[in-house]
Length: 117
Picture 1 (spheres, rainbow, N blue to C red):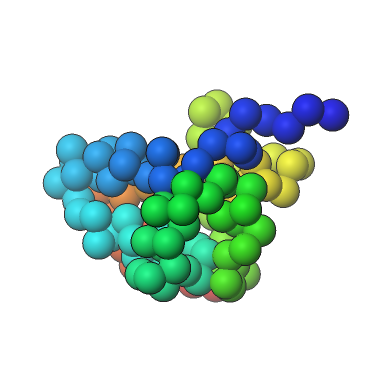
Picture 2: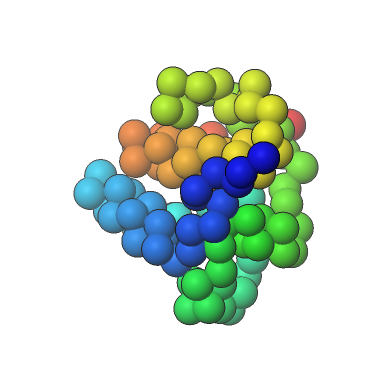
């Protein structure tokens, strides 16, 4: 089975779009980083390295230091698909990140974006 195209895309090539989406709505790059840290466990140095090294999405999530177990609390629709129903684990991780960035851009409070059980 052929891999989805986004799996081989560099995380660093999509990262500016995440930041831009947030900043257009009055949010900050730091808030985007906070979301990424919460979801993946990357620290600032680790995040900078994967961006600089052009690490692809598959490796970005595979090598994430500590995927947050509370990410399973993320519910909702991204691109017309419910994130909690996505069967491909990697695509689900990517869509979790997309959903969190969407919520940030829509003005949701960080306390609600960063789910707690």
